[in-house]
Image (cartoon, rainbow, N blue to C red; front, side):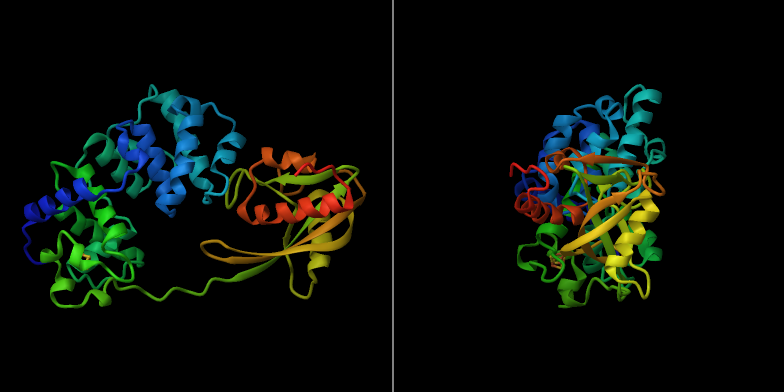
Length: 368
Ligand code: SF4
């Protein structure tokens, strides 16, 4: 990195940030717990999506203690639809530690805070710099893109081993007197001006420092390694009806979608039809013998590292009592009770179809 007048860069960037920053609810508080919640939610998620979730979350759990003692089901219900549910589970685990072992005070030092569940390098740097003014640079996707262009960095932004290089560059230009504002300004610049496809260089406050702009190479940065193709899994699930109730099961608290409720089912094996997979999976997971009545829906959903194509069947309970193998709990519920339980987004896509089906069949009373 060539020598740079970091003071001038910071001055221009901070002036722009003061004038142009978006009006976001977590920027109106100095409460470290609120800032922590917002940063956890903002990982992997768009700002506009996060705003209503953030407001509902801090309204429902206004203190670290209230989050610590909450039922996990309630925490996941508020988080429902935001995805990456391990974030919510870890946030609550960390809140329990803060509440019971740290006198309800969010640690004011990087290394102490970094040891809490779910707190990685980024969250630790963001919360410590924004809430406590610690001089630690944050590096997220937006910041990497800005740095790549400012300094024509050839290392791919999606290469894990390049992360240290970006952290070092970010630390070199950090304004240690105003680290929280500087970090937020860099992220804001990436979000509003130095956009992924076409940067708005004529409105950029730091264009005079930008090498990619100077050499007309903005389209060549950031460098990125080609992504691997993500696999697609075929999934079969059953809405098992018995009298006026349907069966839902609870996933283990850890792992993907941990702690969420779902309709039982699983991956289709090679040579197996979706219907056969539905019968087999439900027998394996719940011990129930069922009859598949009809296919209700075919749902496509993309996760970070894979995609699913999920066929949902309407099934009737034939015989057997629930004995769980895999799921950790179950309920027989009415359609209206679905709202009380946190479900994965892919299941949500089924609800309206299911409501119409049940109303037309009059198998379960449905009020909406
Ligand atoms: S001049 Fe353009 S490419 Fe450079 S940092 Fe600003 S917006 Fe990004």
